[in-house]
Length: 167
Image 1: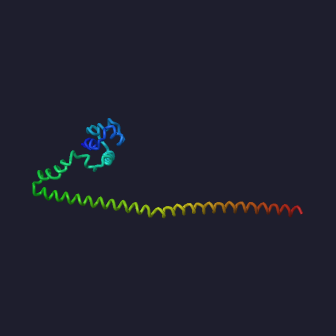
Image 2: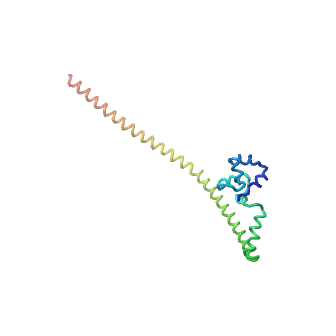
Image 3: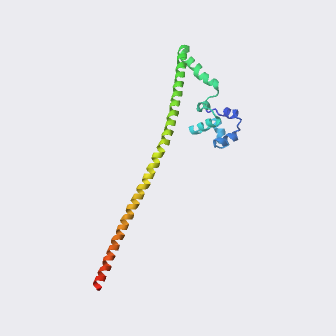
């Protein structure tokens, strides 16, 4: 069950204020806080952002629960010797997660950089497309002028024949 009621209270937010912040009715918020209705992951992330906590913190009752989950449970399940190794393993996994998060952030930065670098190329392509359209329009205009020129030549020939025949 989600645990954001206490976090909301720590931020000195009333249910009404918080409901407005997350864009839900007071009734929906009350149902969320009491676990009466399901909530989307997107809304959970939005709540975490507003409360300025980690996503996972919304599912924990307190920091003590973290230590219970990370220490007491492994000790009870695996014994003291194995639990110590398991806790070390958890720490290594957390470090790996942090490295992966850093790598993802770096990749996002690189993508943004590439998008910025590609913008001039995209702009050139758009300009080329416009110029190609202008050339096509010009070709069409030349064809029309050619037809007009042919019609003018035909009229001149007709006029010349009429003149020559009337002499």
